[in-house]
Each structure stands twice: as C-alpha cells, then as structure tokens.
Length: 363
Figure 1: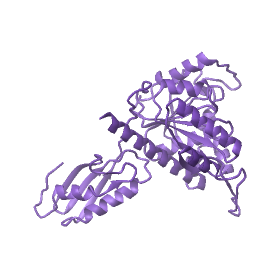
Figure 2 (figure 1 turned 90 degrees about the horizontal axis):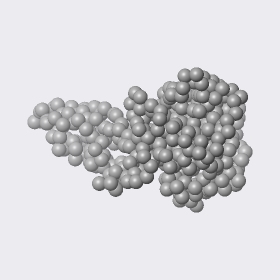
Figure 3 (figure 1 turned 45 degrees about the vertical axis):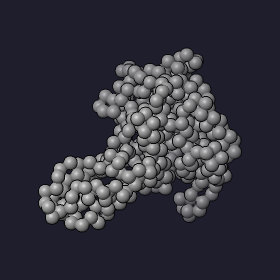
Figure 4 (figure 1 turned 90 degrees about the vertical axis):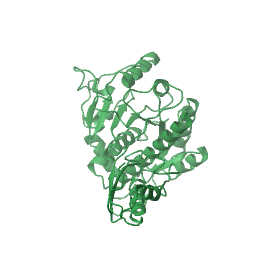
C-alpha cells in the first residue's frame, strides 16, 4: 500500500477505518479484516483501491462495492473514489477426507434421487451461469450410463472417440462427458468396480487445469443412490451438493433420501432447488402450478437446509437444451434464466462461506 502523497488528503488509516465499517453479510466480518481491500492508493483527494471478494458470483458483490465507495466518499478530504473489482475464490480445504482434484478449487455436485426432474439441465445452466459471472468453471457429466450433456452443449456423441477424452470449452465452461467417447446408439454396461475406476479417472486423470485453475467444477451426478455418487464422494473433496427436485410429493420423498445419503457420506448439502415449480403462460402471463408448488421449500425447512430457488417450467428450456444452447446463454433476460443466475450466486456464496470457515478452523 502506498503512503499518502498529499498531506491535505485523507490518510490511509482513515480510508481503512472507513472501509472496516462495511461488513460482508455472509461471513459477518468487515471487508478489511477479510483481506478484500488491497493496493490502496491516495493522491490528494483521489482514492483508489482494489476490492477482492471471495467469489465473482456473490449476490452481494455490487452492493458491497457500493457500500465501500460510499464509506470512502464520506471520509473528509476525499474528492473521488476509484474501485477496481476482482475476485479470489478460496479452495475447498477440509481438514480430512479424500484427496483434492488437481487444479480444481471447489467441486459442486448436482444430484437427485429421481430421474426426470431436470437435474442435468440445471447443472449445465448453473455451470454456464457461474462462468458468465466471471468464474473459471468446469462441468463433468458423471452419468456414465445415460450421458446427455453432449446434446445440451451442442456436441455430437462420440466426437472424441478417435482422439481420446479431454475437456472441451463450451460457452466458457470446460466440459467432459463419457458421451464424447460413445458413438450414437452404443450401449454401455457398467458394474460397480468399473464405475468406481471410471469416476477416479474422470476426476484425477484429466487436465482440468491445463490453462489455469478452475474456481468451480460442477458435477452432474446420475439419479439415485448408486455407485457413482458413492465413488464421487470417496474420490474427491466435494465442497457441497445441490439437490434438484420437483414439487410433487414423490419427488420430495426421493430428495429427502438423497440428502440422507450425502449426510451419511459426510458431504455437505448446500440446499434444495425446486425445478418446474410453476408455468407462466408466454401469451397471457397467467401462472399455473402444474405439479403443485412449494413442496421443496417446505422440505428444505424441515431438513434444516437452504432453499436455493424455484425454477419455472418453460418450453424454451427444452428447446434450448435440444438445440445445444443453455437457456442462460440463449435468452439471458428470460425469467427462467434470471432465476438460474440468482441460484448460481447463492451457491457461490454458500461455497465461499464454507471455504472461509474451513480456513478459520484450520488456523
């Protein structure tokens, strides 16, 4: 940090004191003690500094920037404030557990205990949403028996069959799917040991950090409590799991089973998403609760988990998935895309909070 250049201007001590009144609402500490304020420069009444929160996708990022600017402007002698925004995502670092994936700071798994709830669609759009926020993101399709992410990102099944599996960048996200190796119509039969070995290779043998560390690796798990989720929990340090369900009671019962499984595996559950929550008529705007409504919120409350959001039912989501263009990319201003962007922010915030308290516990 540079010392003040003009005795008539504010002191660095006064600037930092003002910034220390701004508290991160997630971490409940001021932004100075959290190390988010860097490179303070003062020239007369001009003040500049870098503001480095723990994620580029935090829901309070812009609000914290506004508060920081206001706090500094209120210091006597300040004429102008320039803030350079950046982000530094903390790596998930539990005190014990499976080895981390090289080049990946945080793994976020997307799961359900029931098929057909839109889990893969949610996983793809969350990954792209995090990338659009400025994070470095990967997406791993861990549904070994039914990989469909190639279709959702606009790539042909089997297009890497002759070259070998490597991450490919789609919509700013590094994507890997076993479907890249399987030609259309090719059936695969997986048993427990094969699944475990394949999961291990997908996590640890691929060059995820070939051009820089990933802030987040989003993993689309297969539905159910099968070998793949178990192997994933044993082979990687997962920052947290997001459970996707729909409003019907049968889906909610299965979501509860999924939560129980991950709790037994000592994997944190970040919260529950209600997909296909309601239908908004594109012509008249009337809302119809096709599958019921609010069940996921109630389940989250009963289980003591965060309710991460409700995603409306929209035919354009299906169309965009079939076309290989995620809805947050194809129509970012649509209601469903806006909800997905908000959910991505909430998940990033949960990851940040957990990383902070893990670091605090280890010191």
